Length: 432
Image 1 (tube, rainbow, N blue to C red):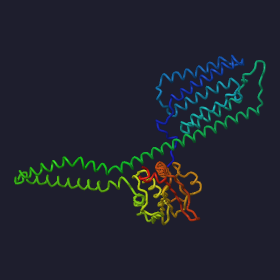
Image 2 (image 1 turned 60 degrees about the vertical axis):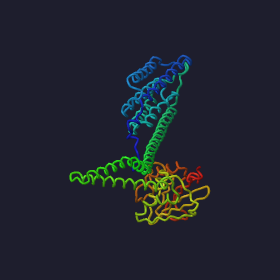
Image 3 (image 1 turned 90 degrees about the vertical axis):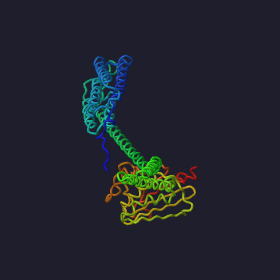
């Protein structure tokens, strides 16, 4: 199982043009207000014409995009890069004419890069970041002074300009990397949760097949009984006719065979209905452990509490799948034996799964349960503990369980997983 790459985004995950348009209108408003305040209120000398041209250019392009495309239009990565590069260039041109790096608004250069890193494939974000660094460097050599009080020239020492350059570049890099990581983790989590829902739906679908079989048997019973009655009448009338007697006999025998099959389905459903609806804890564990007994690993069940008082709960597809996945991981990594220890009190139900393998590596223990953690130890022999373990953990936590992952106690080799529920979540009598 490989980790998803934000470089392979689907069309539904691409940046919406409407989002950029709204941000651009905000930029147009902010730039206009700033120019007006600096020029007419503070009275600082400013290249008003050129600043107005640049702001008008941004507004014109934005208006064209808003009219030309629908609000739901999603940009290709190349188109988004083009628009963000245009925004970056327009902002740098404004800053270049108004003091460069010493302009208080110079840190806004990082905004297009942050937007790109949160929604764009990484290679496109890197291109925009390189353009931003080049632009920041160019701003350090602007010949235009910072607008200041008339008759006063604000001289900034070169070492301070270098400090501004380092600060803006590092801010851009840090903010872009942080935004990229948050976006990547959110994307991974979204995909993993979608997979969890699919697994849960599949398990529920399988658990409902028995009810569907019973319903089919019930619905088919009446028309099949009618066919049987008609077949008997036809046999009585045509049984001795050499042309139709054999066919009538075949029709009746096959209708009786169908009735027998439906009768067995109905009987099976009636016998198993309670079993399918409610499961004692011991039966639940046996159902979880049964598929894993044929892999050459010894499975041992230790019951620390009496079965007489064990909880009886509703059949939960999420619990069955989650415990099955934890047990499968233990069997995959065990050398000889996996031990399942179960206990229950008046308040709690606890399950411990232990194997005699190599256990969890320390770095994996810190991230266990996150999606796409794909290695249990550095000498892994059997599969990973990535999305499957995340799904299992998510499903069990939805059932009210608390999970704890670690290595076996007392220095013994192997991994240990503890799953604990409030008894009210596992016992229908207490749930009522």
